Structures are given as C-alpha cells and as structure tokens.
Amino acid sequence: MRKGFTRKPQGGEPATQSKNYITPGGLQRLKDEHRFLLTRERPAVTEVVAWAASNGDRSENADYQYGKRRLRQIDGRIRFLTKHIESAEVIDPETPRAGQAATRAFFGATVRYANAAGTDRVVSIVGTDEVDLNRNHISWMSPLGRALIKSTAGDRVVLQAPGGTEYLTVLEVCYERISVEPFREPPGAESSARDCLADTNPSDEG
Image (tube, rainbow, N blue to C red; front, top):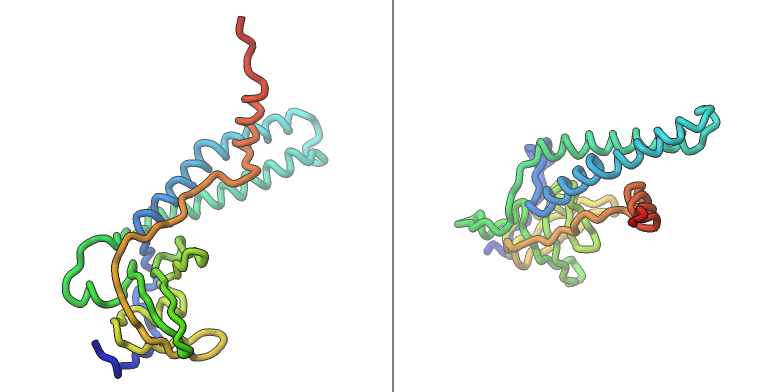
C-alpha cells in the first residue's frame, strides 16, 4: 500500500481506446436485444409497413411513413449491436487473479474510494455499453474510470472532471460479480402490440 502516492492519469491513457471490453452479462444483454430486434421487432414492423402500403397513397399514409422510419431506426441499431458484439473482448470480473492483477484496479474491478470530504463511494468499472449510473457502473473510458485504472488501496488519484480537479483516495479494490440489468422488451414495441392483438382475437375452435 502506497499511502503517499498520487497517481495522475496520462494524456494518452487508456492506450487501447479502440478495445471493446465488456463483461459476460453486458455481452448477453447486447445479444438479447439483437435477437429481439432481428427476430421479433423487425418482422412485426415490416408486417405493419406491408399492410400500410396496401392502403393506397404512401406519401400521405402516416402508418407507412412511421413504419419506414422505424425500420431505418431498427436497422441502424442492429448494425450497431452487430458491430459491438463482433468486436467484444469479454473480461469476467470473477476470473481468479494473482499478484498486482488482483490488487490493482483494471477493467471489471469494483473500487471503493473517498473524496476530499471523506464521503465513500463504490463503483464498478465496466464497458461503454454497460454504463448504469443507478448501479454505479462507470465506463473504463470515463474521467473517473481513467483516474481509477491501475490504482490500488492507499493511492490518491487525480480526477480531471468538467467541474474541476478532485483528489480521491482509493480505499479498496476487489473483483466480484457485476450484475448487469438484463435486456427487457421496451414498452410500446410493435411485436408486443401484435402479440396482444393475437391474444384478444383467438382463432375460433369448433
């Protein structure tokens, strides 16, 4: 423990900004959203567009225009998710670590620190696709994430934030499971509306 050490983030850190680090839970969330859009939401919206197109003048057809715009949004999101899934480098925080890798803060670490006022806070360092401030999940590329990277208990680090410079004291670094909010079907999804319609109009039997 180096109580007198103050670490300042270097201008070029992190050196590999193009890396798409992600936890197993974060990758699963991306895959679940990708599957939902590709197999459920896009087919449902395509069906609405086809129905709207059959109703006449497309230039004044609000359903058709909205559906086409929604399809472009979905396709853009699918491309984004595909790129991020394919480039993902999964790091599991629960993987056993030895030596400095177990005591220094790297991607996947959970860090407890105190600010100048002595207020403690605990954050987990995750990927850019996993940021969740409600769960104190911060990006490894954020100002706070960059300040904490490579620190160990007892270090003082310098946080260069938009609001000014702040000195933080690292109290504890550990590696444990990081719980990522799972993907949930968004309210108002076209596929949900179609499912509800199917439920309220069951096929006649007998």
